[in-house]
Length: 449
Image (tube, rainbow, N blue to C red):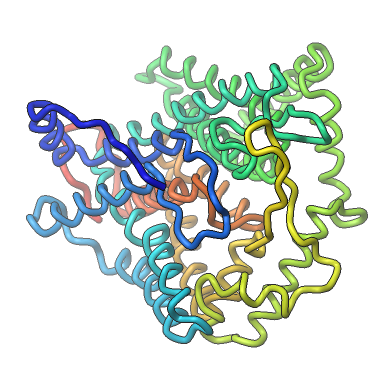
């Protein structure tokens, strides 16, 4: 995809570049917000997709590298280097031993970007609480943008097709990236809720607390009319973890308020009544009577398992799953999933991944890869659980969402780079929790990495 960026006057550039160097978290926030830029129609089978958010994330990586070389940031700790370096090493080994090293090379680059370079750059950029709030605020703003667009699509019947009706909220992403809007909205809802909880008590900002609670409440609607069961489950689990960690009594209040809101919105106003209730009821039947999409997921997971059995140590190589899918998949697996809206019409999109990040890693990177990812995820999760501060709570909630979502989804699509930002936030929270109290100032002083 060609990106045309507006030319900036030289005086503006002279002011902007030092500001970015002094507070690189601005680029991290820009990465989140640029996800909202429509990418247009895209070929899902193409090897590489470059979006405006990807460009911003790579600019952040470049700036971080320059700051590290100039000594403006503290060196990465050994623990950080081992955890993220293990991901890069596992991907490299899988690429060298791949069934198609040339194809796997692009996968290696993407994995290194998503799980190593961008998270470490975000980690380095979050030097104080102001940086963390800036990035979390960008999640909330992006969610509000997508939420407004998505709610309008549902109300005006201009969204993607769902049960034959154009009512599915997809935001600016379109029907070919059906999960993107619900992902952005989920992240923003959790970030807003965590920021609101962080402003409770003496010294908290009451106006900010009310604004964040209001934002979280509004985002429930577009999340509901995204009809994404996976996002509903991940958000419910993450919100439960967040409320339990902040104050268990809030969980009871939240459940009561959520039930009341559902009764008003669905029962009283009729918003999404038939679609939402039908979709909710289908969650309970995913094992006894799964629909076609769930059945296909089960078959894709079994396919990934068979591929891993043939390549147990280092896997078949990044991006090898599509090539091996047909030779390992059961005959009943669908040829693709349906996508339709007013822009693209009706399309049949191929199933190019197992729709489970853990199975994807296992099949393409083997035991070496799954061990490296498990070590990173477990270290981040345990680190985030140590403290209960607002920004740490937000990182914990977002990381929980990602880890739950990875049970039935994997990386891919426009919002992939947001996973990198979440991992960077979680890494900062985990290491910060081990280092000591969170600095309250915004003077840009670097914390230990």
